[in-house]
Image (cartoon, helix red, strand yellow):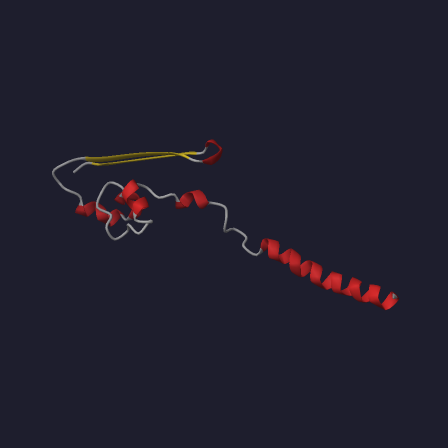
Length: 98
């Protein structure tokens, strides 16, 4: 019986730290998720695949080179406000004047 307890104690000291390391496997992957909040309803409807077709004022966020494709005859304004969890609010405004 004494050998069984010693074997269990040895296995516990080996397996304990190995399981504890799993808690820290994905360090740094959760913080900053709010930075992935997209801008604009059209981009959200496309699932964020908007970089290649960014041709409205949200191009400031998605792909600044898309600003060159905006209509030169008018001024474009985009205002976004999002209320998220725990009183976290996100606002964005882009004003593109040609």
